[in-house]
Amino acid sequence: MTTIETQPAADDAGASPLAGHLLEPLSPAWEEELAPFNAAHVHAPVAAVAAESADDVRAAVQYAADHGLTVSVQATGHGASSPYAEGLMISTRRMTGVVVDPATRTARVEAGAKWRAVIDAAAPHGLAPLNGSSSDVGVVGYTVGGGLPVLGRAFGFSADHVRSLEVVTANGKLRHVDADHEPDLFWGLRGGKANLGIVTALTVDLFPVATLYGGGIFYAEEHIPTVLDGFREWTAGLPETCCTSVAVMRLPGFPDIPEPLRGRTLAHLRVADLGPAEEGEQLLRPMRALAPAVVDMVTEMPYAAVDAIHQDPDHPVPFYERGTLLRELTPDTLAALLDQVGPGVASPLLACELRHLGGALGRPAAVPNAVGGRDAAYSLFALAVLAGPGAEAGPDAADRLVASAAPWSTGQTVLNLHGRPGDEADRARAWDPETYRRLRELRRRYDPAGLIRAGHAIGIETEVGR
Image (cartoon, rainbow, N blue to C red; front, top):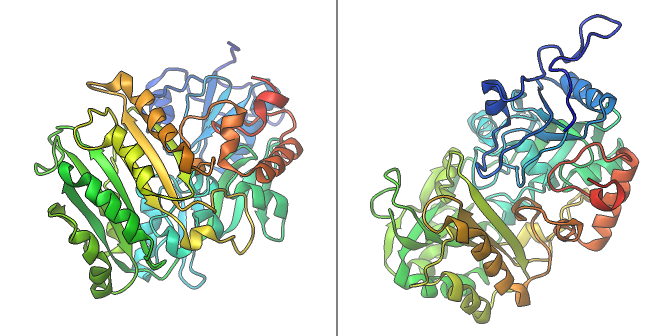
């Protein structure tokens, strides 16, 4: 392993621009700054920088280049799909600025800000962002990975609604990119993740959504086949304003899980509908008629309560995830999935989720970008917690579940739900071949030496080596 000094030497102008920002290896600050949300991964870079500004990011990239180190970046840690054990890791978690402009319905968001901060800043103006199932996730990492929102069928991917980005490229230059300034880089950063540069801030659209009809319904284990088949038929006729998913959940017996759900296997239907509550109730009536609910929490709610729909964990856990995209959902598809996670099956998976796509997610962005998967009808996602009984069997079970759906798969993935990236062929599945080819060309142009090596790296193994 390469070793370097904890603090860089002063330059000709005086103190180094990184003075006070390089972390002491294995110190409490190091551990806190670099800990990802997925506790199964432990980052072990040679050096780490706690950036507080775009200038800090620029200085860190230059420092890495001067010391022959590769670079990775982490904001909130939710995007850590694999451990990083190479060169310099830049943490942007301290860059948390959020400015909402209600007149233009936009928010400028710095690299370390979470969606919760944007939601809370936008809500007083009757506006909402295109966040995903958890507001604890960082805005930038989620968005440059495409971003699959709770309201995706109504508005499209989060990356479709980026106005501009501020990004530090591998040569240490801070660039402002939009549709008119460096449009190729603007195209690639929206859906190409972090391999083309380190985004220090972005400006995104907000939408006039103050309330929605949403929440979740839990059904008992014996009703899972009925609920999944009902979901298949129900989603075929839904309007684009209704965004939904269903998951087979095996909830642990933790005391913080409500008693009616604790330690049980259940089907969890999630709903977010933008119409009036009475219309939402009409839309949901077929699903409510399928089977009695263990818990029914679907109601009119302020958008700020959006986390109640999916109820994702809000604290780090060790997990393994795997995803794929489906062109269709048939009775045979469901039979294949139920063989692995249905009633009476001793599966180690915490969740098997089917998310309804289509609508605005299936249409090109107004300003084209690199987001893939627009031709899919559903997303399939498997999640295993790597703790407690059955933890060792979790990854194989997730892989088998996704493999069982191969006959109905498009062969692609949603980038942020891809799971741990494998070799280059596996990573390329997040895009169609032409998009991936174009992303590789952009990476060669903006980072010819392969300095920036985020987890879902583009064209690194074959062109630069590890």
